[in-house]
Length: 200
Image 1 (cartoon, rainbow, N blue to C red):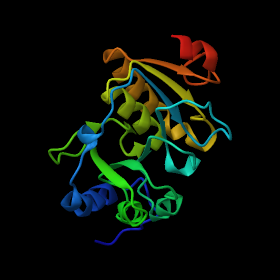
Image 2 (cartoon, one colour; image 1 turned 30 degrees about the vertical axis):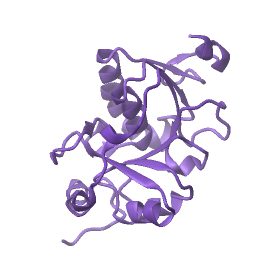
Image 3 (tube, rainbow, N blue to C red; image 1 turned 45 degrees about the horizontal axis):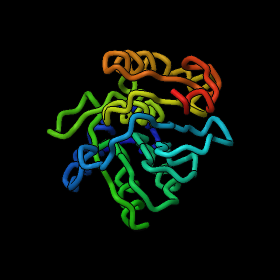
Image 4 (cartoon, rainbow, N blue to C red; image 1 turned 90 degrees about the vertical axis):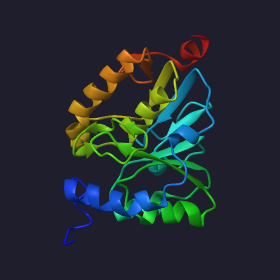
């Protein structure tokens, strides 16, 4: 297949990567040992995040997290994998990403973007083809039955406005699942202080 590996919005690339990665699926997000009512979800739009665990984050934040979540199809995303740990990866990530996780001694838990069918759990990660790792992390928290999510550093403005429609889809799914979402800055969800959120 001829494609530009930097064209991360190419639906053909999404399927191409998935066809490679699905052959290596051993564990899925259903195998994650998780039973928590609250989750902090962190994106790279902030330098500091509240000290709360369980914490899900995108790998580019480079902070300690219980689960790192990625749907990024760029091969450069493998450079963001710097910590050993549990990674929830969409089947459409570049195959260099799971290789890097394995090289560091981490564990991969796979899921499929909602528009692909591979017989493994699916997550809504935005509006196809604009999948977003931060939105995928929020979807994962809800999928794992968290009822309270606090987001920190996830901002869909500037060059990230292409993900706004996807945010609405993800947030509507959360409402259907009975999951409440809050924000440390009030940009994407109701603003709440960390101290108040902890008391909910």
